[in-house]
Amino acid sequence: MAKAPPSFQFYPGDWLVGTRHLPRAARGTYIDLLALIWSKKTVKLDCVRLSRCLGITPDEFQEDWEEIKENFTISDDGGIINDATRGGGCRHATARRAQKQRRHATAWR
Image (cartoon, rainbow, N blue to C red):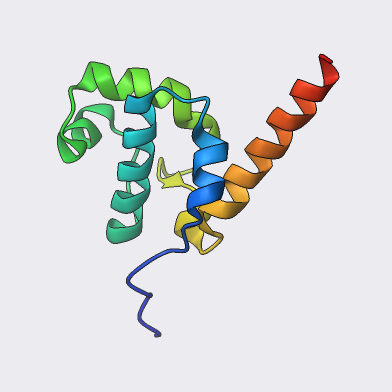
């Protein structure tokens, strides 16, 4: 079995555009969660355990999760999945979000 690469693709411009709508704390939780999922491969959605891993309180995690959960999928076994952690890179998820925001902005003009 091939060893997984030590990193995932990250596109700073896409990240900035695609996460600009998020509060600063939620952006931090988002990138920390991506890194945790990448390094552990499998992470279950357990707010108390994840908050400890991320160095925040369970209440802070829950508040941030409400802001970022649309970027993740929960598998049947409770694992958290994101395109970046499956090899798709942050670019795809954030680019889709940026495109959606542009469509929404132009619809109101």
